[in-house]
Image 1 (cartoon, rainbow, N blue to C red):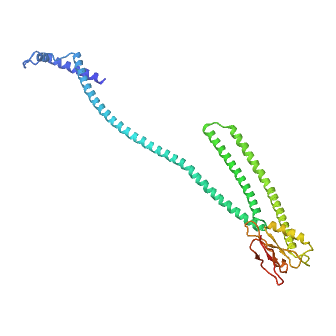
Image 2: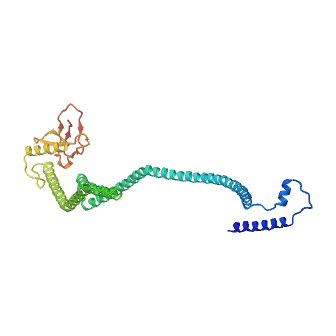
Image 3: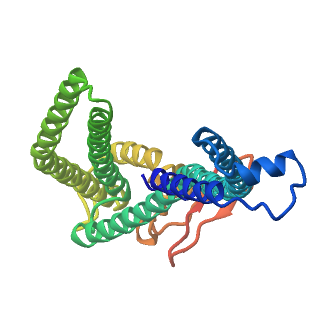
Length: 354
């Protein structure tokens, strides 16, 4: 709108100038040429020519403006390319740093997973050693308590009782381990269900059956433990009573054997043949070898001589009062003779070892 008004205003000004020139032409100044005469005598131009001139001037102006804009655009493009290159470099640096952090994190996780089993093994070994130490201390305390409560028990019986208790503890420990493994498998199944959404029903039923079976076995073991303990103590008491009775019988038999025949107040009137038979049997059980002595006054006496030292059998020495107070000579043997210790005033018995 403004350009159209300006164009109309210029046309009016040019028309007024042409009228003035036509009415008052400059005739004093000579014409230089035909064109000068035309321009001076006919200053008015047509609107089409003026429009052409204006359009040419506008096109020139627009070309200049376009050239300026092209230069500006090229500079902006160059700046943008440099900026994008710098941004790309920054982005690549950031990505590289991120990848390095991720790789370090992955390496750390891998190292942790590799070291975790070793640490777990070390912890398990330490826990096993500590548990073994605790069990050894408990066993030692239990052994001392049993020795204080039952001082007449033998070492073999105490070891058997401790072995039975240890076996029961191992069974209980195995039950606990089975229960822990079942719980771990159950947790793994739950984790797989949470991650994948698929639940393995048969495994759950199997785990439940296993847990029920283990709980029933543990309950049955707890119920049987007091009965087994009572039966074990009863059996040990019977064995101890039998051992005490056998020991008393053996001592009485030794007293009867070692006392002289027919002595008043020191034994019965057992025949010498039965006494000799019992003496042989007793010496054979205890690893003692009998040696016969030739009597001088018509009586036959036998005296026990201790056998050579052996690691697994007990030697036997007859007391001095059991030897008859008579002088006797040893029966010649192929081996070297050894006189018996302890001779009486009335005589001494010489013994020979086979």
